[in-house]
Image (cartoon, rainbow, N blue to C red; front, side, top):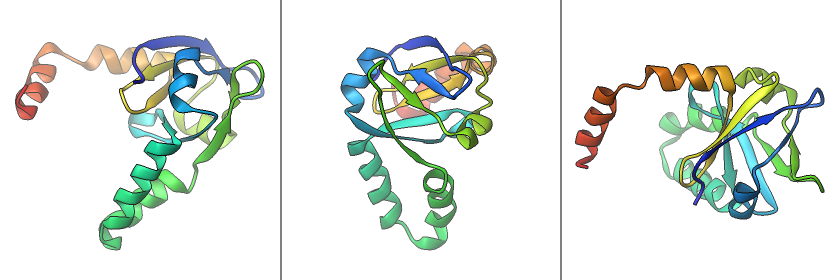
Length: 139
C-alpha cells in the first residue's frame, strides 16, 4: 500500500528519487501520467492495467477524453541504480515541477506534486469538506 508523503528535489535533467517504500509497491516498471489538480499519477503495472480495462469497458463517447488525458502523455518508468526516475519534460510542465516536489501515497497509486502546489492544495482542505466527503461515502 502506498502511504505517506516524502519531500524530494528534481534535478535539472528531470530526475527524482522515488521513495524506497514506494519502489517496493510499484515494482520494477511502472507508469507516470497526468493526474488531477495538476499533479502526476504514478501507477504500478497492475493499477495501470486496471485503469486501462475500466476505460476500455466504457462507451467510447464517455471514455475518449479520459483515454486521451491519461494515455497520450504517459511514460513508462524504471528506477536507475540510485532509485531515480526521469520525468519527461511535458509531464514536468503539466505538473509545474521545478525543484521541490512531494511524493504522496494514496493507497493504490502515488502522486507527484510541486511542493508549493501541494501546500496550497492542503491549505484549501477544511474539516467541513472532509466531513462532507466522509458522509457521502457513509464513513
